[in-house]
Image 1 (cartoon, helix red, strand yellow):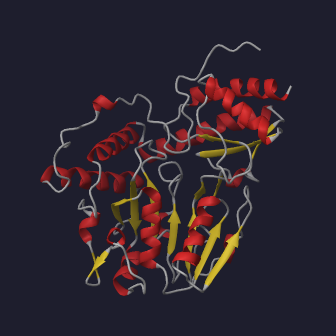
Image 2: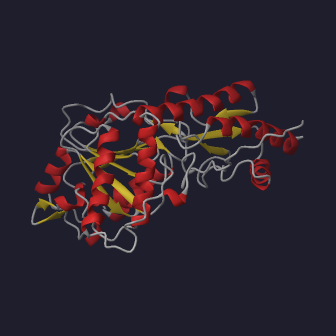
Image 3: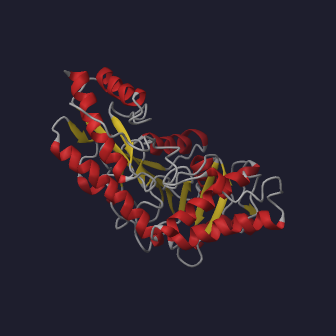
Amino acid sequence: MTLSVKPANPNFSSGPCSKRPGYDLSQLDTTILGRSHRSKPGKAMLKKAIEDTHEILGLPEGYLVGIVPGSDTGAMEMAMWSLLGSRPVDVFHWESFGSGWLTDILKQLKLDNVNNYLADYGQLPDLSQANPANDVVFTWNGTTSGVKVPNGDWIADDREGLTLCDATSAVFAMDMPWEKIDVATFSWQKVLGGEGAHGVLVLSPRAVARLESYTPPWPLPKIFRLTKGGKLIEGIFQGATINTPSMLCVADYLDALNWVKDIGGLAGAVSKSENNLAVVEQFVAANDWIDFLADSKEIRSNTSVCLTLKASPEQVKAIIQRLDQEAIAYDIGAYRDAPAGLRIWCGATVEASDLQAMLPWLKHAYETVTA
């Protein structure tokens, strides 16, 4: 088999993800570097990042956006430590990160009234079991399993509890029913190909009301505190961050947001990711040695696309190593806790042409290794 065309960009990592097409570090607005993030231009830059996020995502009126420490993990931990404890909690999880939230709820927060709804990799738990009187914790897209929630119909409009959603590999690539979500967290390094270390926290008015009416019984570290004197610290959601952010990362994020605007906004980014998934779907349909880890098309992720191969774990490693060495595809191995296989990022920063160029090489590597 003769192959000549290689991907122009072999970066298919699921985080940090590929930079946007045409990315040029020298084109970032770096005028703020060396200035305080609390200076007038520093605050203005952070506020613009917040406002652009709100606008592009089409968040409902009254929803707040804050830039917080610790990537998506920090944002999610902040939400759980600040909001949980006043009601029973339903935790829905089907991969490693969702399971990690359950572990923290049980072993760190030590909550007693917790309902554990678990599904194996490739499946979803029965979401209809969500109790509208309880708080609900879940991931929208299982980054390590390639399984996403198909919609928000299972979340009651008249719920009494809050919904806390880890949405890090979904936001900017999937349509989110924001009216169903009270807390959402994500990081720049996923769908937008931004830099790590910063998280984004989205709060509904219902979440704010909980923050101002409920005080957790445990101590809160400074970087987790969202209230002072029983009132929301509004500055967090206006550009006055809890700790010092990297303004270079903020400039990088603004560049990514401007790119989203250029490709047609949120709809353009979602469409690009879905088209990328379609490229992989066509390849899978044509080859009987590869399949999706997700049980059904309805729950198949269009960002972190997880695949299983008719090969031993050792052969899968050999295929991955071969593609890496030949600069065809970097970082496409399944997550360490997931079943052996591949995980190919298909978010909006990945070009369909690179996927189309990479997949024949994948087939060649498979046939060579398993011969």
